[in-house]
Image (cartoon, rainbow, N blue to C red; front, top):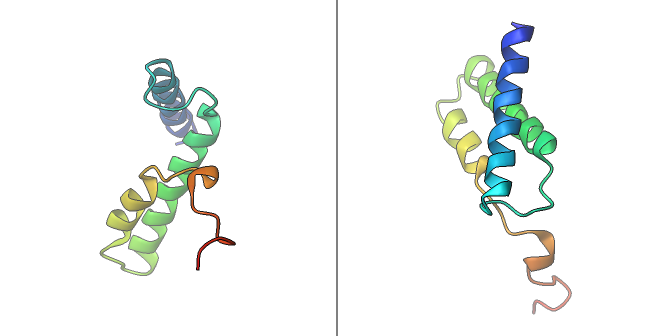
Length: 81
């Protein structure tokens, strides 16, 4: 199981590097961090699905995996209203 998880993480890291090289992700993207975050979200979805019987766990995990604006691109909360 450990070997399979390591192979999967290597695939994720490789795919992120390809996306960075192709301009699909910012040049400063950390492939290891992205792989960690995706793996953590998948593990959390699995836990919620199995332990809490949450039928929306997979949907929520996929939503969490979508890109979000970087903090510097978000409105300044001090200037809102």
